[in-house]
Length: 177
Image 1 (cartoon, rainbow, N blue to C red):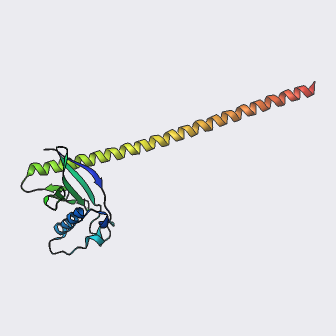
Image 2: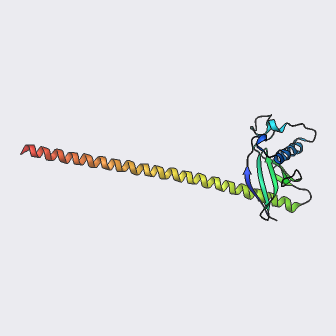
Image 3: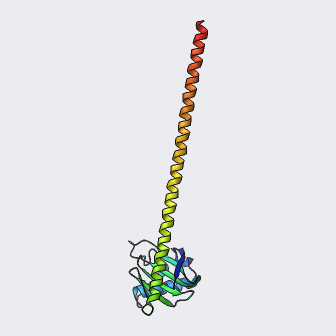
């Protein structure tokens, strides 16, 4: 079984989510904080890790595909936690606890989730690295172009100075005759 994580979104406002995504995030809160914990998610989505009122920080919403079809929705949050739902439902199929997926009945599914998520993270890191490298290459090209332009200006300036010196010498010679 191979699972692929794709279509990463980082929601920061509860009202920007679709109704099913809001319901899924409410389930995430109950699982994370306990059944009895009354958590007003709408007021607590986003923020930063230092804010005690921000229940969910670093929220990621992923589509998870099996055999090329989007079958699961995964909410990952607070760096090391998450909940995986059957697509478009609030049916929990797995949870992420301290960076590892847990589904007590199906170890192969757990492993496929873990492998799929690691692959997605590796792809994202490679894309960031490539973008950074491209930015550096672009900056280096700009610097090289600027250097060439400066060198051309200096050469042109030297040529102008030489021409002026020749003209002055010619004028002096002409006056001296």
